[in-house]
Image (cartoon, rainbow, N blue to C red; front, side):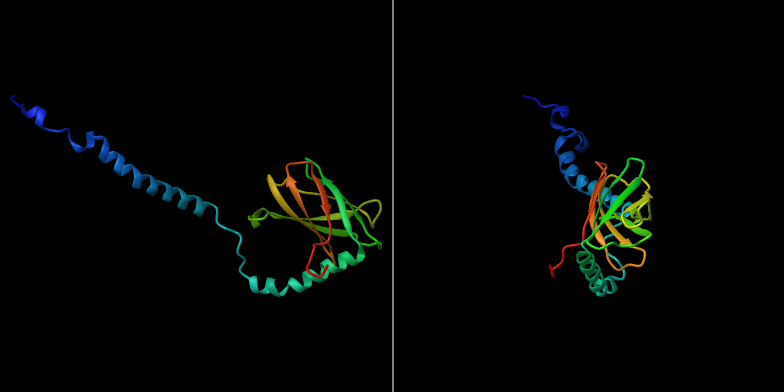
Length: 176
């Protein structure tokens, strides 16, 4: 049997399967790493605050405001309409005369999406409040409601989009 030169010469490496299969495995890891780096640069993590020590010291003030809200028996219910209109009713054992309440919508991870809006007293200055929000981004939101002077606070959650129902109550603490 005579062998010709064509039969003895294998095809060049770039025309074979195995070199490309071996290159594809680390190549995929490199591409995935670059994609992860791009995502991390475009969406910085907003979970860590610079003044965490000061915020840690302020926890006692927050707990005192929660205790005051429980003492007053405060709770709030209301709705956020599809257009961002807020209607809120504040109830408690004792009347709370506040002309303005501050409602804060806090995104769990993106502080740049947080909103603070003032709710003005409506027809009954101690119970009905109204305001207007910019329509929030879809997701879960933390809500904080407090009077202009501080003193107490109510907390709650909002799933947006959804029914827009708001239920706020004093935060549960270790001293309950």
